[in-house]
Structure formats: structure tokens, C-alpha cells
Image (cartoon, rainbow, N blue to C red; front, side):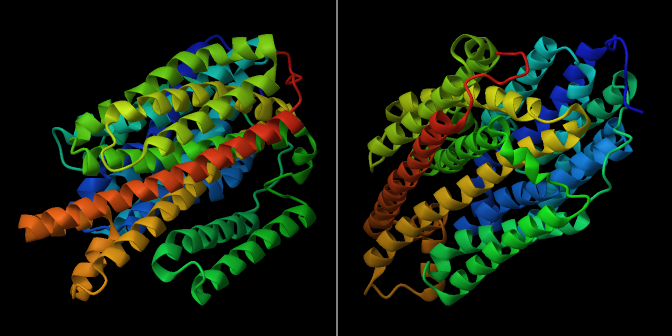
Length: 509
């Protein structure tokens, strides 16, 4: 039954348990980024395959989150938390020992399924344990900051592991932490559920996964197939049709996994949109910058991970302060300020992106992105979760996490594909008329890492010219892609200023 009465004695210890689980699951949004060059070299992955390795996790994560939230409310939040951690650990083991790209993509999807059960359960556990609005705001702020910190420290953790172990270590590290979270939950986290919760909605889940998957396919494969190709257009149109069918299904279902009436509250809808637009730029930029640091500047995985530290440092400082800032200036200005900082960071890095760019050139932009994420994520999360009824906390927290995952998946897909389109266009022109064999051309156009491998094999003046052309093409793509990300964040600022109430309405502001 739903817990009632006095606050749970171990609620702060339980908060640590669920935050640790949230940390490792969100670390997996970015920990793989520093291993991407290793996957290019060892598994011969192309740029589009790298995007799928990253996005298969986010796609299933987002598609099943709402089902995970409803299952948690109906069958018990701790129970689903434990099941989710078990599936996540199993998927991590499978991913670590994948010997080819396609099995790795599949195991990443299994990890996403486990994450989809764990994350909404964790936030709804917090919502249940902390009944006082002020305490709940602090707890959710800590949880939201943990998620943002996980996203930011992923590249650093990955770099530390890859300095000593093989690329699969970025997945194996999840297993002992998942076990610790499992045991901690058994000891410290009380179970709770909503006896009146609706039954699960598997039809809605299938439609959401299919719609998002088709959309991601069209975006990711467009640079290779052609943005105007009939295949891309047909799949893109199919994705819109399926997503429309999902909305129709949810509107007419007597047990929808996504209650569309939530969107009538601007505290929910605008804050969720702000999260999506913010993580669009955050995760899309990290996808590119870890490759820039290793392929273009020649840093090792550990050196590249450590150079992402400015994002993590500013996020760690600003996230705990976000609730205080929101109480002083209001939720609207805090969320808008976070998005504005992300936009400024993306546009600064875009402006300096050219052949010859140094690490020092991009540090100001990274600092702004970390500051913005720290202000945005906890504040918007508190607005989204605080706007739904207590009994729907599982679905509300899942909806919040969907906003994060969809935004991140689309950011990697769109920003990665814009970069890839520009990269392929420049190199196709450079290779024209040079009689390059088809297989070699495919490798060069597939990724910057592939082009540099070919350049190393060729050697001499020709190899040096190819490497220079590939790096120049990548940086040109980086410039355009990050400008697109910055423009998306600017649109988010306008949306928030026009639509988000200044105060959250649940006592924290």
C-alpha cells in the first residue's frame, strides 16, 4: 500500500542509494563517448554506427520509461527498482563482451530497458519518502544534480578505465555498483505503490519505441543515404505517422501510460520541453567533443576525459545552488538562464571550431555548458515532478526522464548527422577524380577515425594531405552542428520565457 504517516527514518540514506543508481545509469549516457575512437579502430564502426551504439540505449530507455513508471506505481516501486538494476547489470555484461557492432547495439538496448525500470522507480521512491515540499525539493534537487553529474563525469570515468583496461570496462564497471545499489535498496528503501494505479499500456510502449526508432533511423542514416532520398523520406514520414498514432492511442486509451492532461499544466509541459532542448545540446556536443579531443588533438582517452572536467565541475557547483537561485529569482528565470548558458557555450565552441583549434579555445564554452546544465536540470525536474498528483509520481517521474532521454537521443542523432553530412560533403569533393577504391572511400567517408587510419596506412605526403583534409572536414562539420545545437537552445530560452510560470507552485520557490 501507499505509505502514510511519519517520515521514514532512513529516507536520507535511501536517497543516497537511489542517487547512486541514477548516477551510474546516467553515466552510461556519456561514458561510452571516450571509447568511440576505440570502437572505430577495433570494431571498425562508422559514424552512423557510433550514433546507433549511443542512441539504442536512449531509444529503448525513453520508449519504456512510461511503462516503467506505471509498473512501479502498480506493482511496487522498490520491486521495479531491483528488477531494473538486475536487467541493467545483465545488459552491461553482454555489452562488455560484444565482439561486433550489432551485438553491442543490441546489448545497449537491453541496458536501456533496465534503466527504464530503475529511473522512474527511483524518483517516485523519493517523491514518496519526502512528503514535506521543502525536503522534497532538496531531495529532487540532489537527484537531478546527480543525473546531470553522471552525464558530465561519464567521459572522465571512461578515460580512467580505458587508461588501464579494454573498451568493455566502461560497461563492466556498472556491475558492482548495480549490486551495491540492489543490496542497499533491500536494506534501506521501503516499498510503496499506488493501489489505484492504472494497468500497464504495452500498446503505447510499442508505438513510442517504433516511432522514435524510425525517426532516429531517418536522421542518423540521412548523411549516408541522402537527406532527400526516398528511403529517408518514407521512413521519416512513417515515424511521424507512428508517433501520431501513439498520441491518438494515448488520448483514447482508458489506461494510457502518458496522461495527456498533464501537458495542460505549463509547469509540466514547458519544463519538460526545456529539459529536452537542454540535453539535446549537452549530449550532442559531448558526442562530438570527445572525438575532437582524441582524433583531432591526439589526446588519449584519459586525457580527453579529464578535459571534459570543466563541464562536470561547473555542473557540480551550480546544481546544488539551483534550488536557492530558483527561490530568489523564480523557476522561469533559472531555467531560461540555464538554457541561455548552454546556448552560449555551444555557440562559442562553434565560433572557434576550425582546423588548428586548441583545447584552450573551447574551455569557455564548456564552462558555460556545465553551468547551464546545473541550473536547468534540477530546476526543471522539480517543476515537472511537482506538477503531477502524488499518486501518479511514477508516471510523472518517468515523463521527466523521457524528456531527458528523447532530447539526448535527438541531440546525438541531429548534431551527429549534421556534422557527418558536412564531413562527407567536404571529403567527397576532395576525393573526386583521385581514383580512390570504393572500399577505401567508404572507410574514409565513414568517420574521421577511419580516414585517419587510412592516412596512417598510406603515409608520406599523400597520407598527411588526407589526414589534414579529414580533420578540416570534421571541424567544419563541428562548426555547423554545434551552431544548430546552440540555435535549438536559444529556441528553448524563448519558449521558457513565454510559457513557464515563474513559481513552481509546490513550495520550493
